[in-house]
Image (cartoon, rainbow, N blue to C red; front, side, top):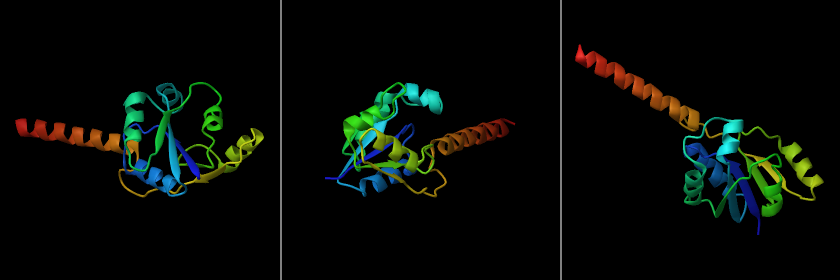
Amino acid sequence: MVRVLATGVFDIIHLGHLHYLEESRNLGDELVVIVATDGTVRKRKHEPITPERMRLELVRGLKPVDEAVLGREGGDIYGIVEELRPDIITIGYDQPFEPERLEADLRQRGLEVKVVRLPHLDHDLDGTRKIINKVIEFHNMSKRLEKEARK
């Protein structure tokens, strides 16, 4: 049985997430997903839009996912990997990790894990920030149209 591990924030679920999880699942027999905690998201990216428990539940409900767990707070990003013991870790095209470095770090901990960077899904709404910007753009356009209609 080949266990694949994927990680992410999954703040606003979009096609890029689904593509990432489907491609990850295709590499093995079981897909386990680590969902970043609110604290980790704040530290590394931005203020989360949806709370960690909601994001965890959403990811658990996605078809490619066999199991989803909440990440751990603190400096040791490899502790949870040691617990889950995957055969493969997938990283998204935009995740700030180098596969070779992750493999070497895990090998030092006695884990032989293959790390695979997955390709980008080229779609106009394939990222959380793109979706947020589209909503803001739509909102601003609606406000302009309302203002013009009142004239």
